Amino acid sequence: MWILSADIGGTKLALAISKQEQPEKLINELEIASPQQSEALFEAMIEGFNELLQGHEGEVVKVAVGLPGILNLQQGMVVYQQNLPWRDFPLVARLQEVYPSAVIRMETDMMTAANGEYKIRHFEQETLIYLTVSTGIACCSIHEGKFLRGAGIPGEVGFSLTTKGAFFEDVCAGPGLTKWLQEKTNRKDTLQQFFESYYAQDDKVVPIIKQWQQELAQKIHSFILLLDPHVVVLGGGVMNHHPQMVSEIAQEVDNCFTLPFFDHKKGRVQASINKGHAGLIGAALL
Image (cartoon, rainbow, N blue to C red; front, side, top):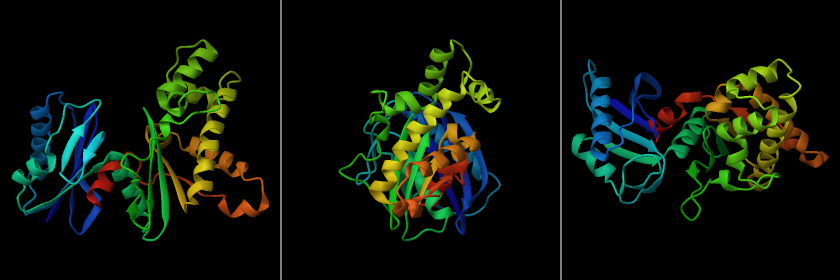
């Protein structure tokens, strides 16, 4: 009995297989480039699943997909994606044709990632916020095991404003931080190189990274005051590859709680447990 999971992005398809009794344990996975034609994208996913199934006898009981963009979950439809070709694409129905005996699940990639972090911690009644800092910034909230969906498109915190008057994402996501550092230092380093300079206590880089950490910390501080989550998980490529940043941002968040009756809100910020597999594991656990 097998579960197939997919995390579909604008540049790559991440696919995995796991057993029904242990969906969080990925037995095998692969990555392939994301075709930019509608049918080709679907076919590439199916071909990847077929490759993963080779040598594994038994029935596919679930296919679960996390993907970006606007989804109609009731109709199983991918409505629109900024960096992928599907437009009003009936993904659930198409997958059901290929896997007629399987349960088909579709969800936004932010929610699959959050779902994996929630369930890997064995949460059931708790509240969790998952914040991804990568090419962009977004978040997902889960309360008592259910996604907080609001009026339909929640979690777009990347478009809130910073103290610099710009969108949060334009300042604090990977590309925005890189641009900020390049402009202030007059260097063309990559973000990885800038972080290495920070670790080496480069006096031109350290103040900028500290200001970036404070921007993130102040935003997270407001999340904690608003929802009082048990955990705020920092994920995404920037955080997953730089655990020291997670620790330092967590300390900055704690420093925001200056009133003694808020001491109990300290220690809420944690690193992702699932790291780069968050989307695949979370999809399998839907």
